[in-house]
Each structure stands twice: as C-alpha cells, then as structure tokens.
Length: 235
Ligand code: ADP
Image (cartoon, rainbow, N blue to C red):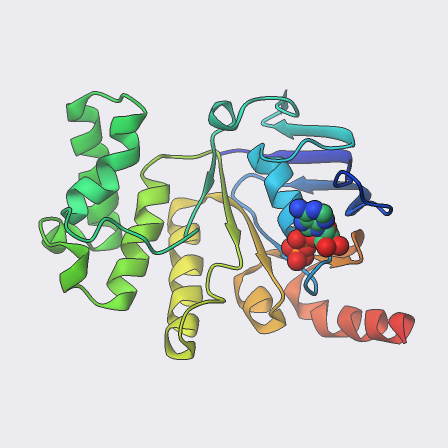
C-alpha cells in the first residue's frame, strides 16, 4: 500500500521540439484509483512509462511512499504493469502462470504457493488453479492476467489502455473486473484511457491531460463539465 508523488515532472523525447509532458504535480493517495484521461498523444503513456522507470524525466521527482525513485531501476520500484497483453502461457496451469513472476523474483516455493492460493481464493479462482488458460473463457483469462499482477503485491499498479484491443462485449466486463479487484485489494492504481465512460466507472479521481499538460484533477461526477470546458478552450 503506497502513495505516489509526482513533483514538477516533465518529459521530452529526444530530437523533438515540444515537450511530451509539461511540468506537473500530482499526488496519488494510498489505495486510490487515479485515471489519466486524454486523447491520443496527450502524454498518458509517457507519464506511466516514467513511473515504471522506462523513460527518464526531463525534470522533477517521483516518490513512492516518500522514497525518491526517480532514477531507480525498473525492478527496484515495485511498480507492476498489468494487462499489458493477454499473453498468458496457454499450456501452463493457472497456478504456474500466477507464480511465474514470483519464481523469476526468486521467492521460496512455499511463499509462492501460499500467495497464489490466497489471491486465487479471494478472486474465486481456486477451482481452476489446475486448468490451463486455453480451456477457460476470455473473462477468466483476463481475471488471471490481473491476478498475476496482484500476486506480486506491487506498491503501484499501472495499466495503459488495457481494454482497448478487446472485442467490445468483453470491454465492459473487464472494466468492472478491474474496478472490483482494485477495490478488493486496495491497490494504488494509475490507469490511462481515452474513454471517458471507462474513466468515470473506474476512477476515484480523473487527471485530465491535453497536449502534454495536466489541466485538472477532478472526481468523476464533474468530469463532463471539465471535458466540455476543455473542448471550448480548444475550439
Ligand atoms: P498518449 O499515451 O496520451 O497517447 P504519449 O505519451 O504516447 O500520449 O505521447 C505524448 C507525446 O509524445 C505525443 O506527442 C507523441 O507523439 C510523443 N511521443 C510518444 N512516443 C514518442 C517517441 N518514442 N518518440 C518521439 N515522440 C514520442
């Protein structure tokens, strides 16, 4: 459980004229679901990539639980990207899929078994731990992909437009699943989307981005009004 503090954070890609992200401040509280919302190119992925450690900021600092991780390596941050792809190992049991990253992290076998079983029980996957993903429904596979991130007990969960490539009938179910699991596990979460309806369902607060600028952070109830005012300013 963790807080995230982004202070004066900005970014520019090499050989580009204007910054991809202009300096901004944002504090995400312990257990909060913060949605980064804005059109394509507004800077959402770049912000997530800086938090993940894949892009170095041009200015500013990133604190997780008050610890400066601005220049920490990806593996030293406890930030996990969930649902990056739905590529579970199709012939490996659900149990082994869930434990895979923990084995790579070098955790002892008993610890892996107990974490996997406890998360599986909370999420209702216990009865399918010995099945293989290839035999399961798309929503069950999504659940496993999320559980795989949760079982790592990350300080911060990040998701970058995770439902955009799903067929429409699975999008709403997956958004609901993400919301339910985030609440059940109380994970501090940052989620990027350009879909306002998803943002409103998921978010405790929505951070509005436009052309690399953070223009406001609001609760979902006032989202429509803010979007309308941004559209007015842009036109
Ligand atoms: P979003 O996630 O909201 O679509 P991005 O963070 O991907 O936005 O992009 C922010 C800006 O940075 C855009 O202007 C985009 O064109 C630019 N950009 C993204 N990736 C690169 C890159 N690898 N090299 C140069 N410019 C990039």
